[in-house]
Image (cartoon, rainbow over all chains, first blue to last red; front, side, top):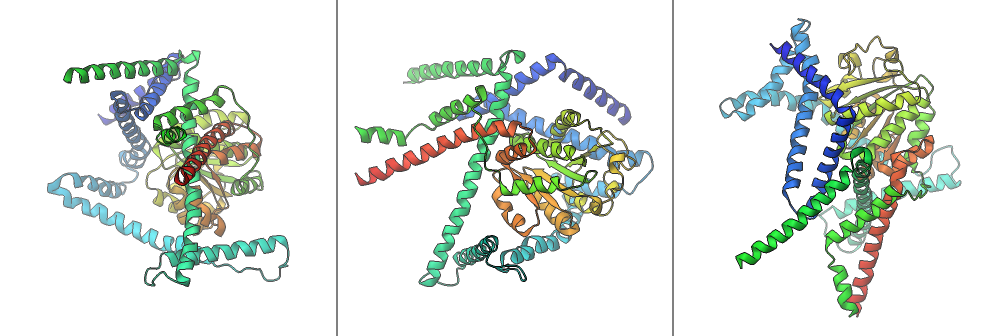
Length: 266
Length: 274
């Protein structure tokens, strides 16, 4: 029964991939991509039903994709096939532990999920605590407080002096920022001055992060615009342009309808 | 009179800014300006130098963990790095922990290997999506075939020419993670530091500053950041792509932001005084 279902799903998969790569499939794909992108951007003007459609489709399609990839890449080769071939029945143990997590949604048997969670917690903590301590704590301390000059190497070269300055700056910045977050001493006098310098270091970091964030967002926007430009060509039957103007017409129309309704209400 | 206009400017409808930005960003798409990208980032150069110094036949494991939401920044990075690896005759294995990446990986390997006459199973292998990144990362340190016994097409990996002599991290020249998530941190944690395999990274511009400590400590041998990093890398390998064409758009967008910030601040400065 399951075998024939998998075969059927595979047939659909093959047929759909053949259709998608055909010229008609490519054009419809372009219309869909351009339409959904413009629908999503339409929220910048105001909330509207097209945005809602695109939002729900995005969530639904995302979940569908996640399910099929997990099913065919993990569940089938790692659980179903070893059991079916009688190669390895031990995979049932992690599979049952994983399935036990779903019991959380059924109040009467939700206690079953504890077995799965216990395993996840114990395994996760055992692996992550020593690794985190070593990589993100101890290694970073040794990376912050480094010797200004290396033994046996010339100190008065430009590179050595620049390296020493960098090492000192990192150490100095760290101390100042730590002072800013130390609340058991009243921030006045020398402590205030040091913690104020710490604020400048923090501001520099936030500035760098904000600058990079702006650049990142523009890059993402460019990606969508690039696709919209591609789909505005004749090989996609001017999808982006037609959908854009259709949406503008909708907004202009709905503006006048709303205005009429308001006047009537008055 | 002037005050009235300046107040109007400061209370500008934000939708006007969106419209202005849209127009400005479409200009280089329609007619590329060809603005140069002259400053190559230090950490990006480090990635290039590291791969450039690997011997032909070396094995590089690339984890492509990004989905369509960060595609504009990371897809050009991934393409550029894979092109560089193929140009250097390195063996490439690609894996992912994100279901959304699988389609994008297929897209890369449908075109890039042909440019360098590379064959699947001989020069490169695409491994299937796997869940549970911690288990996979740690298991790759002992025997990678216990996780990846088959490639994405269901063919056994152990006998593939591309996998010859590869059992775990010890046999790999480097591991690279290109991601829009925090998975690079996990790679440093569970692979780079634990098994002492050289780690390289590619991340979005938003998360780039956070990786400074790893670079400074040498836990990362190099890092490509955002679309600018992709443009840098494309310039370094001499094969320009979407990263480079994006530089025009980024420059114009940044100029608009700078103009708005500076103008608003000048107006506010004078309004407070007069």
